Length: 261
Length: 261
DNA sequence: GATAAATGTGAGCACCGCTCTTGATTTTTG
DNA sequence: CAAAAATCAAGAGCGGTGCTCACATTTATC
Image (cartoon, rainbow over all chains, first blue to last red; front, side):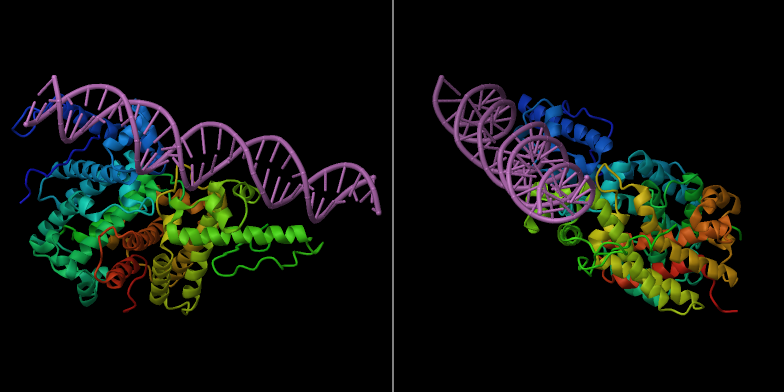
């Protein structure tokens, strides 16, 4: 499983992609290397435009202009505006996933509470730092066209996979809270998420439907808290972090029983 | 203050707005009546375009064309595209509020659980029925420009007000759950939502910070659940309603203690 | 070096938001 | 009732967008 982390470009920071020698064969002629460079450049300035003006204002012509090429020239590298957006979505997913993973991995595996908090706080921090990227992946589907699931699925699952891993660790340690206390009815949960358990993400786990439902509740609350803050749905908040901490702890209680025993 | 219940047009269904006799004075000349009719028409077809193609694809020119007027003519009635969007946002808020209120009011006031469920289910039903409207008000802020808060606040608060009302009824009945069980730390909650209590929405209520935090947690989970389903953030779901019921009951447990006593 | 493929260039189409001018219509005022 | 003021429809026009096409240029391959 898990071959080499697939592609995972994440143009976010690193830009150089021109001098890579390629897998094996020929050493990449000057045309191929330039193409790689231009492709990376396009993604880079597209990312800049996204960060400053948002996805709605992203313009292929403007990107081309910034790169000193004629407007029509960019179509040699990008099929359409939608395709560029799809690439940005995937890139944002990877960026988020790596940020969350880094924070997550910095916590000892047996400290469940701290792991959950690290996960949640990293998500929030990333979202506040890249609001437009966050809007791109967790906001309303941008135009009429929606990103093809088969291209975003792998990247989009990366964050959830961390959560699932934690969830299973908690389950194995017998620290899952009582579903009934949360208000979860087993039968209803089974109908709601039962089939989800057969997807590749969960197939290898020993999670039950109710347990997955707990995880989904926690994740929904967490994501809702971040969305609410980034989009300012509750108006300007005096202390966003304090409120988030509250919601974070509530969400934590959905999947982790307090240690006191 | 508060003249005549503000405006609250809600073009959603009813369209006729031409033959209203006006408040008192003159009986509205043929020019004024036609203006009202045109304004209503614009909002109506804008709504249709929104429902079919989404906010991103909304075009003033297209609306004007549908109404048989020259593209520039629409600027006599609408200041700009953003202003049209603002109107649609406000209208959507009212539409949602009235839908939720209707469901909410159909439940006896002392049946807290049923009231919460009615509220949540009405929210979900409306969102699934008007996904683009939902995206408009609870999705990512559309373009770079965001709707002026002073114009959307009143309408946007209407739904929350219902929740606050229920929350206070529950508190008065002593049915609020133990905050500590939810994981809410009083001090943290006080910092996070303390200042919010002074806003007009909460000033007249006797809610404490922790109690408000519970309400926010419940609302965040509820809205997150709807958002997740409408935007298909978890991929295609086998039974969205069943999963929503699970999350609905979890959110309910944040504000209402089970009756068994 | 000739041929084929990939790339840069510019014109052009249809659409968009938005402004301005011109002339017609309606309302208000004297 | 007539003149003045406000309102309106209509069209041209500006700069912007996504995207296509024909053409010239450069690179890679035979």
